[in-house]
Image: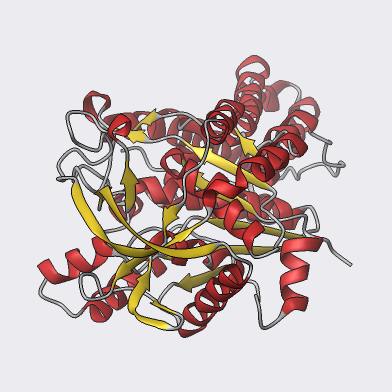
Length: 477
């Protein structure tokens, strides 16, 4: 019986078009999901859309649409990423789904029953862009550094609060027990320092008359749940809680807990707030949280929906193909730190490493194989420990670098042995070298299966049929 493995992305807000930052997150999660399936795991891969909150209510209002109609249209754009990015069997959850709404309300009731929810009046400074309360120390010149174009709102009302302050010791104990709970370690140090400084209770509802777009609070129709409280619950509503506890136990307990991919601006919500909420409901925590950096554009400026400088992944795929984007995300962007994206850099790396690199190698080796009627020699695939260790640590760039070293080694072998010339003087030796190259190409393709699945399958099919490609796998741009 295969062991379960549960991996999830965060759910992107649908207040803007899908952008490359989320494409990065979901491609990386899909690569891990594919890798785990290849290792014999049964995988539950979760993603979806976050559709409540002030930011979405505001965006729909500006667009002159009913909010539900707006999120219905927006969700379709994110669902379109599944075929566009060649994602493997993801579960797609929407926070406006009737089932999710029911689960969110049930989760609220459990936390309230356990004594972790109370009501009080309060005043805060609030960033609608982050959908988070902000302290003065978090602001720069009175503005949120992540959303500098937005005015900070001052909220004064009576809301429900979550007793976050009671979870300092349990969270620190969790972090002590799981030394790789957050990857990379410098982000783990950040969240530990945050919790060590002390935790403050946070508001988990809004007055419905001011902001009606949310899940109604159980037994209080005047309030709706705060978007973060609602959205985070998708991780368990997607796996059966509380109606199918057999399913929930399989994916949350037997799997050892979920693995979450998220951006560094989600660190507090995913690795502290959500874990405390799980504890409040007497549920097991996540297993690991993998943190991406930001993508920066021209001049090192962070790409964000708020600044309006994002790149649409659909445009990249239309020009270069799905695997070109998957390549760039998994090899050219740092797995944990900020990385730059410009169309010039994308084009340069595409031509150098895909068109002139992998694509050229496939064309040359397959052409020699077809012309000389040479087949790949049968040999057992090597146990590539360095490659495997890198993927298990979510360091996809190092794993891809390992594959590209093999590509470069095969290129060097062709240059040094020149089998295309040797066929005239020492045909048997030339055929031996070509057969070895075909075998090496097969190994490269198998290593690429989680990363560039479409390209890897094409290469393996070419080797199986013994035919050179009719067209370049990656035409020069």
